[in-house]
Amino acid sequence: MAKIGFIGVGNMGGPMVVNLLGAGHEVAAFDMVEDALAKVAEGGATAVGSAAEAASGADVVVTMLPAGEHTRDVYTGAGKVMESAEKGALLIDSSTIDVATARDMHAEAETAGFDFLDAPVSGGVGGAEAGTLTFMCGGSETAFERAKPFLEAMGKNIFLAGGPGNGQAAKMCNNMMLAIQMIAVSEGFKLADAAGLDRQKLYDIASTATSSCWALNTYCPVPGPVPTSPANNDYKAGFTAAMMLKDLKLSQDAAGAFDVSTAFGAKAAEYYQRYCDGGDAGKDFSGIINMIREDG
Image 1: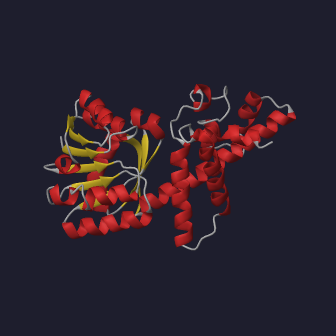
Image 2 (image 1 turned 180 degrees about the vertical axis):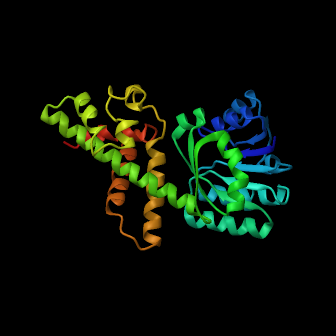
Image 3 (image 1 turned 30 degrees about the vertical axis):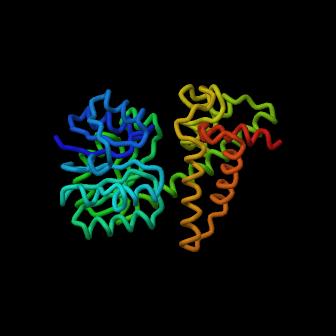
């Protein structure tokens, strides 16, 4: 079993730590939020006082951080992970960040003598808790093969998307498509309501027809058809609207950098910006149906 340093043990990182512990690994954890750190310590992780301390002596370092600037700071800035980790350690960043920063971190890691993998996830808090996350990885075959046993302790679907930064590229494309689909599903139910079509009937038909998709089948935005969807729990977040907006902004920044038009992605970003600005940033992203209904 391995010694793992885990940095960022919040809503996603905390359950991921629990699954690593369940697989028999030793985990030293660090987070700026004391309550989050205390929670994983209760589950068997060793709470430490800094990112550098978490990385020291670790065979593997896993990070789950809010944004690219935090990843850069933890690895090569004040966090001093690349200074503190043993040479040859495996570094896995499961944060969702911009492609450019991910590629910079790969280059920094290679220079410093580390295998690095950008490995953002999909599946939300529920997937993190159940150990069924999808990992979208970018990096070398060597780093990927080293990482697989650890990723398999936390996830169900593990993909190598290509070279450095391609895990982040896959994540931003996936979430842009998901955001667009959720808006489309919401508009479909809005139209069904106006036409007097029963919501359950629409779901039963659409979920087996050509509009079938994850946003409908698993995260149906109206109460009733999918009992486990956030719509049946007052839109308590599995994946917040704020996080979806963050990912949409990453997609639009990338579209600009690569000179690609993503018109529906841009419109989805506008919708989620408006939804968050209306005070619902902490609600599940599927709750955008409520704003769409109010639009008339």
